[in-house]
Length: 258
Ligand code: ZN
Ligand code: FE
Image (cartoon, rainbow, N blue to C red; front, side, top):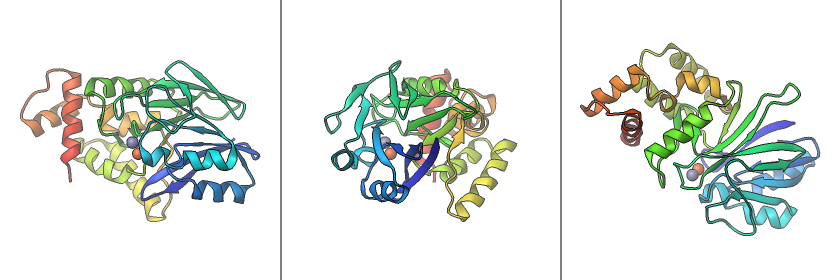
C-alpha cells in the first residue's frame, strides 16, 4: 500500500492510499487534482472516506463519485452530499482489502469521525483524523465542547506510538510557534521545529506525523503536564480547576495567539 498526500487549496491535504490499481481518498475538498492524479498513476478510485462535513473536506465528493463510481463513506451524524454509507464509532470499513476501524472524535464538529487502520505485514498503523488532531495542534471547537475534544484527543493518543497521523492541514509550523510559547523548555519540540522548517523550506509536507511524536511535542496532548498547566495559569491569571479547564484555556489561548 502506498500513502500519498495530494495538496489542495492553500494548506489542505487529500490523503490517498492505493495498491497500484485501486485507490481510496480521504476528505476530497476538490475533484480536479484527484482526477488528474488518478489518471497519471493509472488508478481507479474505489472509496471516498469523509471525516466531517466542512466544504474543504467534501466539496469534491459529488464530482468524484460521478466520475468514478466510488463508494462514499461518512459520519452518521453530519449533513453530507447523499448518497453516503453512514458509519459511527466501533464500525468497521472494508476498503482496498483493508479493515479500518471508525473512531468517534467529536469536538471540531459534533459528528466528526476518524479512520484507523491497524498495523499489517510490517506497515505501521494509519490514522486519518481530519481536523481533530494536527501536528503540534488540534482543530478549533466549532461545534463540540472542550470536554468532548479532550476525550477525542485522549482516545487518539491511546493508539500505538508508531501510528502514522494523516491530518488534513499543513498547519504544523504555526502550531509549533504556539507550542514553543507554551512550552519553551521542551527539547523534543525545539528539535522537531528545526526538522519541520527544513521540510517546509523545500516545500515538503511535515506529515504524516506519529502518535509517539505528538505525545512529546503537541501541547493539546500534553495539557495536563505541570509545565503546561503553569503556562496556562500564567497566561490567564487563573489556576485551571481541572484538566478540562486547562485544555479549554489552552485552546482559547491558541485562538488569539499571533
Ligand atoms: Zn474542518
Ligand atoms: Fe479543514
